[in-house]
Image 1: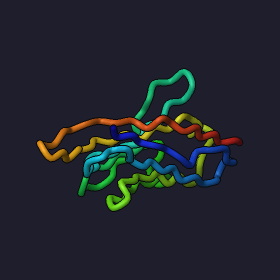
Image 2 (image 1 turned 45 degrees about the vertical axis):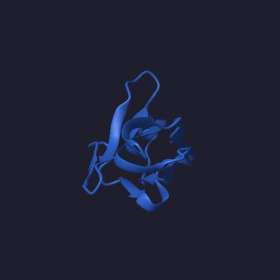
Image 3 (image 1 turned 90 degrees about the vertical axis):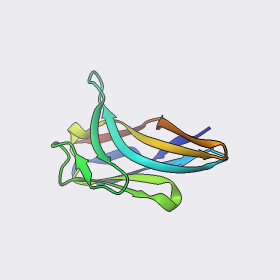
Length: 125
């Protein structure tokens, strides 16, 4: 069973930086990570898309994080990242990774969608 495990959240002062990681593991079969995305949910607000990238494509960002956040991936490690710079108090939220994954089983491939467990990012003013 594929799992996405997040790490890297924490408390940082405004203007600081954090890097979130999201690693796919747990499958006994070879997996291929396709489209990826990072979302966040602040208290009392809906979950929103922060950054996304299709496999082999260019990244897209929410206007609120353009120029400050960078989404990236390391396909050899089945890991995706979100580099966050110039953090603001309004970036405070629980951050979730999401990935569309192909599980390459001997009898055929299966497409799955997985979420990370969420990691808290708190930016103090």
